[in-house]
Image 1 (cartoon, rainbow, N blue to C red):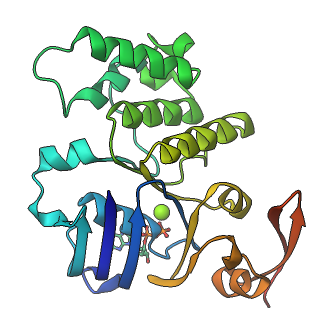
Image 2: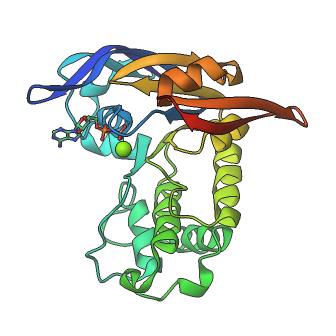
Length: 254
Ligand code: ADP
Ligand code: MG
C-alpha cells in the first residue's frame, strides 16, 4: 500500500491553499503534518480522502488514480476524522462506533461487528460510556469515540486532523501508542499536530507545510532551530534526552 502525490495544487476559489505538493507515503508510515494555522494541513487531508476535488496534479493510491475508486471502495480504504466534528446526532456511543462498519454491512450487523465494537470500546476506555448519548460527552471523550469509529472501519489509510488536541495527556499518549501499533501492523497513518514534541517522538516522517508548500519533509533531522524558526517564526532550542529530540520554544521572531 502506498500513496503518491504528484504536483498537487488546490484553490478555494482564488485562494491557493496547496501549491505543487509532491509526497510519497507507504505502509507502516506514521506521518505527521506540522505547520502554522492556515498552512493547508486540513486541506491536504481533505484532498487525500477526496472530500475536496483537486484542481491540479494527481493522487495515486496503490498505483491507481484516486479518481478511479468508487466511494464505497474509498470508504473501505480510507478513514478520516475531521478536526472538530459537530455532534448533532442523538446516537449513543456504541451505535456511533458501529457506524464505522457501514462500508461493510448491509441492513443487519453481524455478531462479529458487535464483538469488534465491544473490543474497540474497551481498548479506548469507552466501555463506561457505551450507552450514553454522544451529546452528553466532553470534547475529548467524543474525540475518542470518533477514533474508535475510524479504527473499526479497518482502513488501510487513517487520516486524523489534530486527533490529540482535546485529549488529556494520558489519552494523548494512549492514542499515539495505538496509532504507532496500527502503523507497525501496516496501516498508513497521516495526522496533523501542533505539538512538535509529540511529532518528534512518534512520527516516522514529518511534513512541514507553510503557505501551502512542503517546506521540509523527512525524519527527525528536520527538527533544527533553523527549520522551526522558518516554519513558525519562533526561536526554539533543540535538546536531546534519552535519544529523544525535544524542541523548546523560546521566543517569537520580532
Ligand atoms: P490548516 O489546517 O493548516 O490550519 P487549512 O487547510 O484549513 O489550514 O486552510 C488553508 C488555507 O485555505 C487558509 O488560508 C484558509 O483560510 C483557507 N481555507 C480553508 N477552508 C476554506 C474554505 N472553505 N473556503 C475558503 N478558504 C478556505
Ligand atoms: Mg486545520
